[in-house]
Image 1: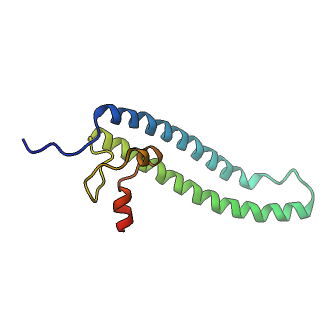
Image 2: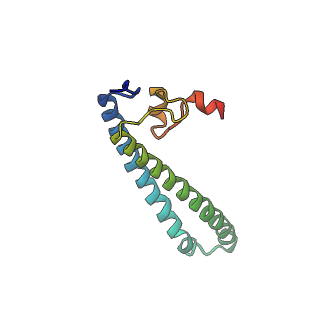
Image 3: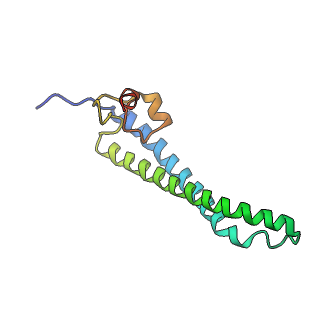
Length: 125
């Protein structure tokens, strides 16, 4: 038997798993909201007849469409990262810095549960 690698105990992993599942659910909910706002963009503003408002509104709709799709892309990546973190929990590799091989600070993981770099490693980049 080689030496046991550094890792978080199962109890901690279980806590992180709950945290991550909650974050995934919230992130998916947010993504739905972003997408529905995005879908509704082209049929709002028709109720208001004021042409100045409408012109302004169309400009902002175009902007929000772009920022919405950016948001949606970011959100999808966030969900993917969180799901990858769940896989790392199953593999018991969660919370281990992929550069230094040391444990990532617990506080950092609570804030950024999908982190794969310790602050130390991040600063080296």
